Structure formats: structure tokens, C-alpha cells
Image (spheres, rainbow, N blue to C red):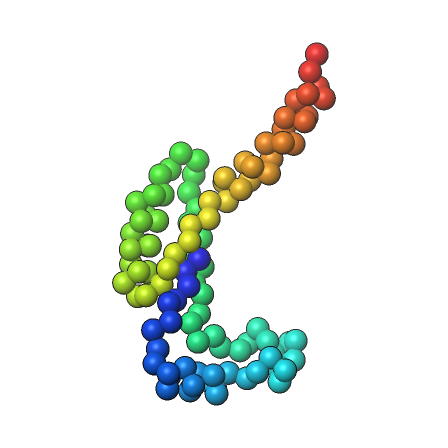
Length: 97
């Protein structure tokens, strides 16, 4: 996920705040349609097991930085491992002979 770093002047900030409606004026259904002054970008990279996506990630992060975005890498495979490991260990202990 990449979040743009604010680099606007005070006048730009005032103009952006006038353009955006306050949350009190926005109904629950309209909230998702409100433009953000600095939109988030989300990229999902998918590859077969064993494929090294690090060069692609590095290039993407570098290019995002040139556009004043900061990047955070989240590896779902690591999240899945940390979630499933306790379940697998528990099941192994259950079926041990």
C-alpha cells in the first residue's frame, strides 16, 4: 500500500478542505464516494511458489518514491503461515501415534 506524502501549501490545503464535505454532511452510502486529497494506492503482486518478486517490489517502491508516495510491503504468505502454523501443530499432536 502506498500513501502520498502531503506536499501542499496552506492555500492548497484550505481549498482541498473546502472541496471535501465534512463527515457530518455525508451519509453512510455517500462516504465511499468522497474523493481523498491524497489517494491510497494498493498493488497486489501474485506469483507461483518460489518466484522471487523482490526485484519487482523494489522497482515499484522506487518509482512510487519518485511520486512522493511511501510504500509498505505486506506479504500475505507470511501472514498465512503465522495463522496456519499453530493449527497444523495442534492437528499433528492430535494424530500422533
